[in-house]
Image (cartoon, rainbow, N blue to C red; front, top):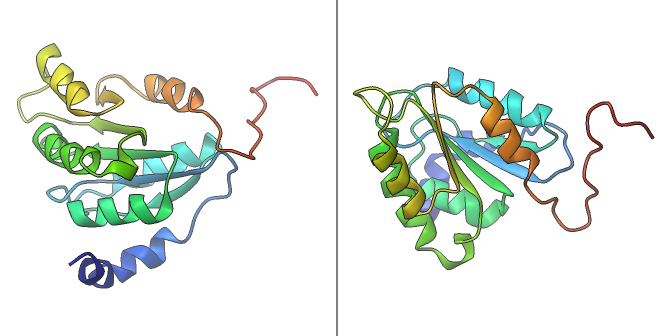
Length: 171
């Protein structure tokens, strides 16, 4: 089944191989199966690239199986899931349970952001449920990018790669 899904989404794989040069490791950005929006993914691709990561953008409507396959094969330093349609909470719970159920992906940082509920911002309880289910961070669309930038900056560098100097740091 995974091979069939990978073949069906070969155009995504071709696009995903076009990465931005970085050095802090690879980050996968993607929406989830029910979300067809792409502008948010382009923004995230540029933002994550500016932070010094290589970026693989899986695109819109990524099936859960494709997310799992790409994370297993690419071993990213982080997976960034984005939602614009307001179904991020329910889609996120389903996806994180699948990813955390896969032993090699249990420690991979996974974050969720965007419009996560159809009725406005999530409650503290809903955000807590997402974190308890396995997300490392949850970013509501009202927060802006500062919290995400700080989270990404705190990620450890992959083995053998030196961390990028802080902005404005002298040599």
